[in-house]
Image 1: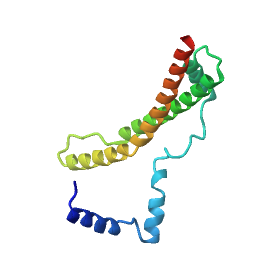
Image 2: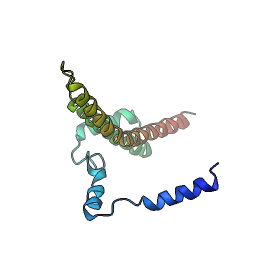
Image 3: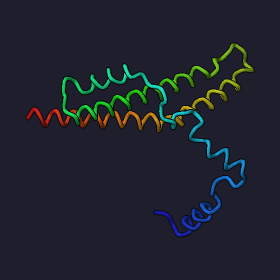
Image 4: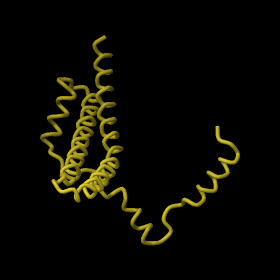
Length: 148
C-alpha cells in the first residue's frame, strides 16, 4: 500500500504530465493512432475470402444468429491476418547484420526501433483475436445447446 508521501508525489507528478503543450506537439500526437494504419478500418476486403471463412465458421448451420457470429468471426480473422502481415513487413524492413563491426550498434538500434513499432501492434492483434475467439466460442455454445 502506498504511503501518504508516495501518494502526494504521484499526484504532483500527474499534474505535470498533461501531454504536449505546443500546437505542433498536439498535432503530432493526434496522429499517433494512425501511424501504422491499423486503427483505420479495412477499405478493401476480398468478399470471396470473407464468405469462405464465414461458411467455415458456420459449418452447415443456417441459424441467423450463427451466421451473424460466423460473419463477425470471419471479419475479425481477416483483420488479424492484416495485423500479422503488417508485423511481418515491419520485421522484413529491419536491417540484417553485415560482417562489419561498425554496423553492430546501428543494427542493434534499428532492431530496437523495429521492436518498439511491433509492440504498438499488439493491442490490435489481441483485439482481433479476441473478437474472433469470442464469436467462435459463442457459435460452439449455441451448437452444443442445440444438440442437447
